[in-house]
Length: 120
Ligand SMILES: [Cu+2]
Image (cartoon, rainbow, N blue to C red):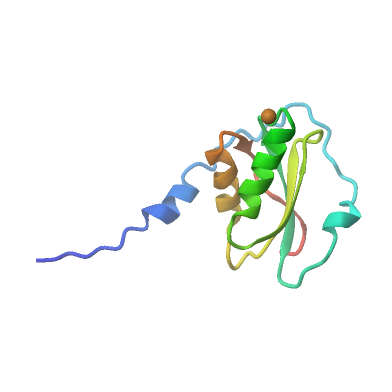
């Protein structure tokens, strides 16, 4: 008897740890409007910011940037070392916020929850 069960462990894997520490370490929240570079409104895309802990230099920034750019469904990426945040434009039909966080975490950084700037 062949029980061919398609395991959804891949999907579950991205969802397991939402218990990320939500306590931001004293960083001033950037409540200003996003810079012009990332404000190109792409139809169907959501722009969101996520805090990232563990970045200490320029190569961390490019590492995070390349990681995010390599994700399916991500359009633009901007990473700020000073603010310890990444701003991404993503297609919510193609990639979930949890997957974006998980990709950053897999590189050894600690990504917090996404905050939507524009879109849904
Ligand atoms: Cu570094």
